[in-house]
Length: 427
Image (tube, rainbow, N blue to C red; front, side, top):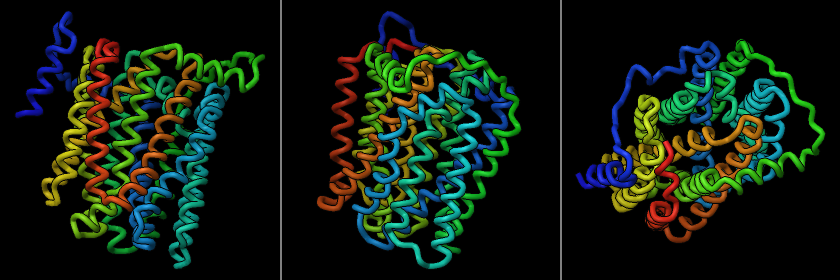
C-alpha cells in the first residue's frame, strides 16, 4: 500500500495545473502491428532477442563458473561496452547517411558469426576467459553501429501517429525475450551446456535478417552532404546540449544504466553466493526482472496518447531504488523474485519513457546522430557500471553493492523531481 500511495500522490499532484487521467486502452495496445513492416520486425526481433538473452545468461554464468570472480562479470560487460563509447557517434552518423535496413542486416550478420564462434570454442572444450572477452569486444563493435540504426528505425516501420506505441511494443518484445530467454538458457545450460545456448543464439539471428530482407521499405533520396563526418556528428552533439529536455533524459538513462542495469550484471554471483543455488536460479532472477518490465511495457503500450509519460517516468524513478533496497536486504528466493519484478516494472517506466520522449522531441534529420549519443551514453554507462559494480562487489559483497546503488538512485530521483520539472510536464 505504501508504494501505491506514493504513486497515486505523484500522479495526482506532481503537475497540479492539469488533471491526470489514467485510462488503459487495450484496443490500442498493438496498434503498430497493423503495419506489415512492423509485424515482420516484431516477430524477427522477438526470436533474435530470445537468443541474445540466452547467450548473455549463459556467457555470464560460464565465465563466473570458470573464474569464480565478479571482476570478470564486470569485465565482460566492460569489453562489450567500450566499443559503444568509441564508435556509437560514428554509428549514428552512418545511420543518417545510408539505409538503416542495410546497416542492420550487416550488423546482425556479424553478431550471428560471433555467436557461432563462441559456440564452436565451447563445443571443442577450449574456451578460455580471454576468448569470451575478445568476442564480447567484437560484439560491442557490431552493437555500436547496430543500436543507433535499430533505435531510429522505428519511424520507417510505422506512421508517426503510432510511433509511441511502436516504441512501447519494442520494449514489450525485448522484455518477453528477457522473461523467456534466461529461463530457457538456464534449462539448456543445465541439460546440454553453454555451447547450445550460443548455437541457438546464432540461429536466432536468421529470423531478424530474413524479416529485414522481406520488408517493403520506401527508399528516400539521400540529401547531398557537403559537411565532413566530424562536423555532422558535432551538429548532433550540439543539439543534445542545447535542448534541456533531451539533455536531462540522456543523463537520466546514463544513471539508470550505471546503477540499475550495472548491478543486474551481478545476478550470477547473487544466485550462487547469496541464494546458494545455481544456473537455473540465475535464469529465474533475470526472468523475474524481465516479467516486471514486460507488464510495464504492455501498460505503456495501452496508454495511447495520454499525457502521462513524464509523470510515469518520475514514478518509476522513485519506486525502482526502493525495490532495489528491499532486494538487497533479503536472501529468500520468493521475495527476491518479487522484488525483481517491481524493479523491472519501475525501470521500464523510466527507460521506455526516456526513449519515447527523446524520439518525440528530436527532428528527423538529426535522429540517427542524436540516437547515437543516446546509445553511447546508454551502453557506455552500462559498461562502466558493470565494471564498477563488479569491482565493488568483489571487495564488499553483492548485497552492499545493491544498497549503495539503491541509495544513489533514490537521491537522483529526488534531485530530478526538484530540478527537472520539465520532464513531468511532457507527455
